[in-house]
Length: 285
Image (cartoon, rainbow, N blue to C red):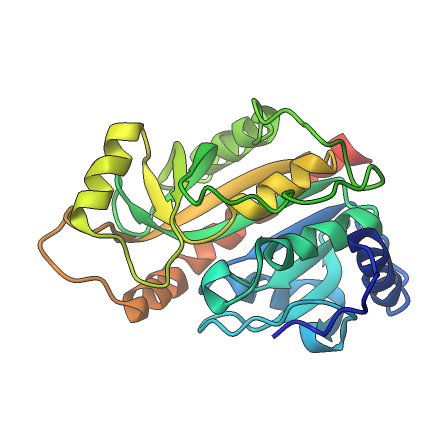
């Protein structure tokens, strides 16, 4: 689990300490961060000139326990662009608080990162999706009812009340769709809905999500988006539909299927990220 926090230590101070530790290990100063979800972390193995740091070595950083999450922060280059990539994340269902789940975004912000790509494995609610397709997230629905910004607000991180109208930066989403089509990928757009997990959704819950306008169901990402937007970090979200959600197909859901599908589409996913990152880099230069 996460490192024990000193009494009286603020979220800002913890994030600052973690960021300083990470930046002391590399000369690179990335402006773009990535969170690579279930089965998708291998992209960070392709960074050039990389520095790899175990989460457990970073002060206050939460340690991933989920299968398919390597638990390493990799700082390197994609082409000429310096990036920081998380190989896996932590989830609320692992027993972490919402603040812990969002803490890596706090650290990214203190590192000087101004844009993030958040990826995840998701269940397809939209019957137009196929297993293995990539979906650019245009909006989300938070069925948690929880928020990582609950509690005292530190103005050094962001304002008390902040707008979520454009939680996902539209130009980044447009760039991802354009590049996906150029590459001939099976790419879509949609709305992501979060549930707590670790159990998958019931068929009735999926019907309710569909009625609310959700296209995807998952157990992550939204706390990170909220924390990122609180700090003014621009967000691109991309889901890999690793399975169809409960009740869409007449078959049970299992995590092995999630990992296998992520591995199968890894090449397409990496190609898309490699195409989009240079376009984002021009925006945050």
